[in-house]
Length: 159
Image (tube, rainbow, N blue to C red):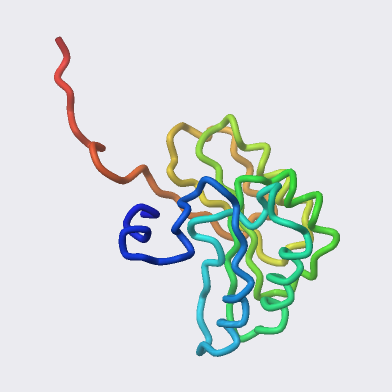
């Protein structure tokens, strides 16, 4: 997707994903929108270790001040989420989620549970392995999906 956006000349994607960049110039956009569900970081991770806490606070400030919207925030960096959670203002319109692709990363769910997020969700996508021991206690919502993209679903005959 970033290659398509680069080819279209979208400046935010000019360097691809080689470096972590923040875009404070777009933070106020939700203040101008009609009430919506906003997926905060579809191609990024707000809890990446290179995102300064000051920027995370700026994002949360906008979400806190826009209760007309529901903000869905998703991370794979559940340890940092838990570490920063006490320093964030968790209003009910901020839905916090973690990605869980297989059994090896179910520890992320426990980190999420230990936050003060009002709404907690799991994104089980792409679900690439079984989750026989997944506990859903204190989880409000679960999204499940498989892998997508080119070359998936092609059968390779045996022998």
